[in-house]
Length: 159
Image 1 (cartoon, helix red, strand yellow):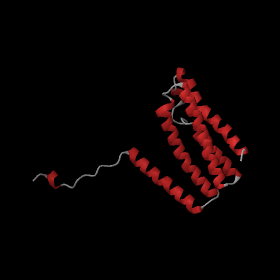
Image 2: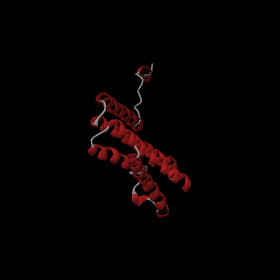
Image 3: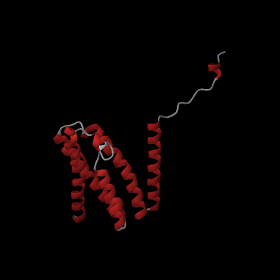
Image 4: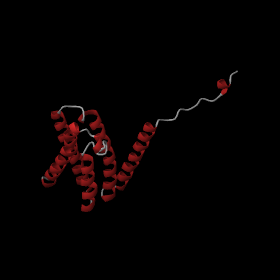
C-alpha cells in the first residue's frame, strides 16, 4: 500500500478572484438586507448607494474593458450616452424612493452617481494612456459624466 492511497483527499483552495467575488456578493447582500430591514429613509439610502456604487463601478470597468476601448467612435458615443442616462436614472429612482436628507442626497446620491458615471475611472493610470489614444480616453471619461449631470438636472425638474 502506498502512502498516497491512504492520505485524505486534498481540498483545493479558491482562487483569489473567486474568493473576492463571493465575499463581495455576501457583503452587498448583507447591506441590502439591512437596508430592507431599516425601511425607507436616510440609512437605507446610504446602504443602497454603497451597494449601487460597487455594482456600478464593476459594470463600468467591464464595459470599458469589453467595449469602450475597442469599438469605433459612434459606438463609443452611444454607449457613453446610454451609460450616463442609466446612472442618472438609477440615482433618481433611489432618491425618489428613499427621500433622504438633502445632504445625503447630494453626497451619496449625486456624488456616487458622478463617481460611477465615468466608466473607466480608476481603471487606467492617466500617464499610461498613449498620446494617440488620449482623445478617446478623454471622451470615455467625460461624456458619460456630462450626460449624467444633464439628465439628472432634467429629471430633478420634471417631476
